[in-house]
Length: 148
Image (tube, rainbow, N blue to C red; front, side, top):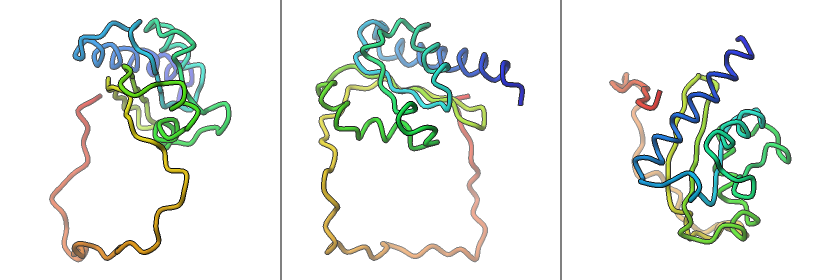
């Protein structure tokens, strides 16, 4: 891959996607109180946030602490207790991602009121599958995306 070309493509597409999500929500970028992005490169996330006009105080991530956690990056930030202390439930939030398959997506949402689990789940839960898949036959579905 060509690094500079991919960098420019990621910044452009994430910014466009994020702007589209904000427009559909009817929100101005300066009303976003939590910006969370997925990308293996912090410079890309910073460039997108700057182009959107998201203040540094409202940007949350974990690349500097955890490195590239791939598809888990946004869920890990969403589950981070420190972020939950900084962002009250109901605040306007913007999630955006650009993946290795050169795909991208964004969503505008209100910060969830969920409390991250601090204990292991109970071990007495019934984990019996509701159904057993028949893997001997081919499946008619195909993977697709409408975000890019």
